Image (cartoon, rainbow, N blue to C red):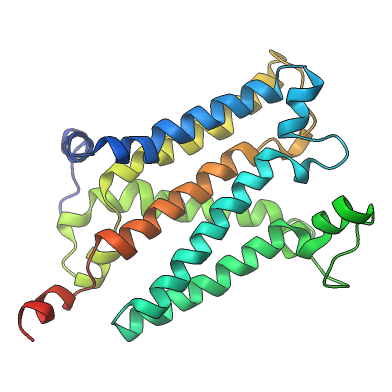
Length: 248
């Protein structure tokens, strides 16, 4: 297999971007970039009321930054449930069922199994589900999970889209996202680097997240998986489905 050249990769990407509709441009990068710019501006504004919208000092998990992540996760959860019920292929239904439970797990981890809501309502930080162990905050798990996710993202959203023409397996073809998803991967990198650099180079004073400054990039991480899921559920056909519809 001959790997594509830089020129070929650029051609794949630009051709796909040229074919994007305005709605896709809005969903892929314009609206997310605008939301991130607004959140980052509020966070570094040093205006308490604006900083609180993004990162409340009592518990930053109550802020807009965290709640946008939860909203995206709930959207992903709704789509996976829909796909698990509606898709024709048993393998597809099993795959989306797994994604449903995995997304629910991630959502519960993000809200510390109800502890954030309990803290907001009563002032107590105990979980609504009683004793719990937040897996991703135990030991060094958060760093391990993030590195694993970034590795998976690199493989799926940066490398795979430009190798699709060399892969003949129809299931892998279905699973490979369209090259335009690369735009969101670049946005995720920017969302991670920009706030860190602004703090590290002391351009602005940190608004309160501290070591959790990477929360800005988590919005885009969840967004890219949402867009990928939309491609799989609504834009791409499972191998054999189209043919079977034409030839019942």
